[in-house]
Length: 394
Image 1 (tube, rainbow, N blue to C red):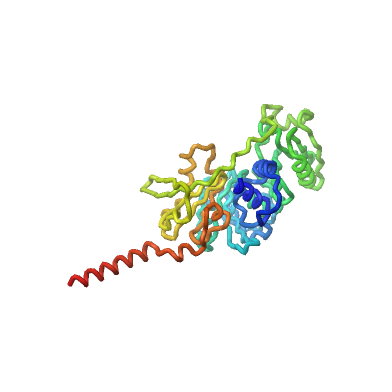
Image 2 (spheres, helix red, strand yellow):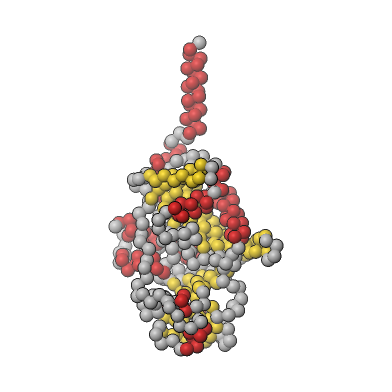
């Protein structure tokens, strides 16, 4: 419907709702290759990254090393680390703000991931920013765009053995290469992969039968520069040389289906979250509107790939500190096949909501809460009126 067209238009970087989108192919393409959480596009990611901090294990010590780094789009994100990446957005509708991304590598230690998330949350509170948690290979579309089409996520800092990367993208600004396990079972007919080998510096570009020509071209362009002396060989699915299979532990079973099963676009759902000791109580609000957001609690808006945790001004510090637990519990109890790591968790604060969030409500008033007396104000009024009654009785 109309809301889906709007979603796709914003994900593709259009600012208004009026130009033509050939809806179905664009949606399929975007959902397969354009990153996850396509509804969360505060801007087109054209600004520079403001600051970045890398978190890694201090081996043998069980603690975490924290390094400020100057992150350029060409620097790979490393799977044994976690990162905080700060970005300031501003779009043509005059909306601006700060996003604090926490990116967690698949091979990062738990303590590293926890420390990065805690620091990210503290920073979001300090800057009134939007906190977004994402994991390696599940990056939201907006995050990919920050890297201007050059993002590489890899398991190691230095290649020590053959490495396999999946290359995806829908346009020059969202292309990303993600390392996957170097085994034939990682291949898929709908995708393009680059297999990098050490001696000599040879890169095989494997093109699935149902892969996009754009992704093939991008893989060749990016990986021909992987080493200054890189030799690229394009391998079409079904015509692989023996030594290609040898590098991937032999030709095995992999996904040969001709169309990627994309996840359906779900209608957003709103839940009221309460912590009762260790128990999480979640109550769905049907046909929700802005007035249903309880300013003393945390509300969860489930938009499919992304789950928004809306924090009311009256939420406690304990509730605030446990938003990731709340999201985890919700996703675990919920019947779809999502996990906390395949879902983008976005924390936003009352009165600092981005349009990506507010457009899911039938109407939205920016000044709504200024006009609504808070619980504290009401309590004061009641106490004052009680005082008047008390004095009147004398």
